[in-house]
Image (cartoon, rainbow, N blue to C red; front, side, top):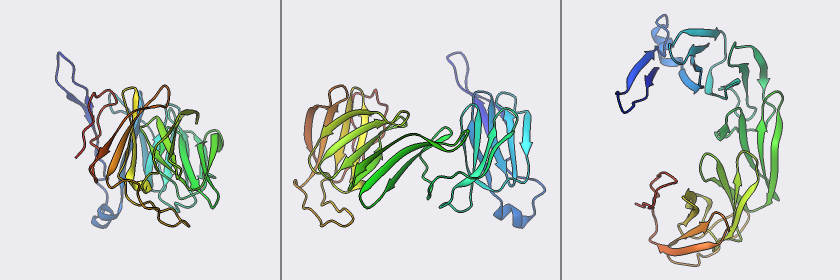
Length: 275
């Protein structure tokens, strides 16, 4: 684990401190089986887990602030300025782990998180975004695990529908009628609703925010929904829509040679790059 000072106009980037992500006392067998993990970093602390030891270090000097032993092996360290979540590598259909206070390691919760699995990887600090498709509805919620598990918000859409992340702050719901609904992860509020042509399969629809527009790419293949017959694609190639973020109206649309890969870029970029 290495923490570096960011570069500035008057100096280069430099190392602040480093720490081994292994235990020198491990046997050869333990070295092959034990897992080390570096995770959450706040303005004051850096958290890591080596084997069964969970550690909190000062972000600037690297001094040990606190450590907790006999912690089940984690696959994720997540949280915010106040709480650390050590998500266990146990049964992912029954997500569990520890919730500790970042400043002193005091335990807030231990055991099941009381949220349905399998656990996704769409974490927003100490909250997790859940999208659970059912026979009739797609249920969406942002679950807050502290002080007790409860939804910060919840919504539902009629099936068939699916979600795709726009960026770290927003997500989109796409339905079989060709409607795109963009929401805020933080509040769940809908930002815009726009109509496009019937989309391809879930893996072939991409929504990104570029400046004041949303760019929607559909590869244009036949779509398949569970329990539904294939619907022939309405155009032989893919398509791109530019949707105004303020009004939800289509600014322009062009055909796109299928298949294309979108090169991720800054939302402020004036160009869209496809490969």
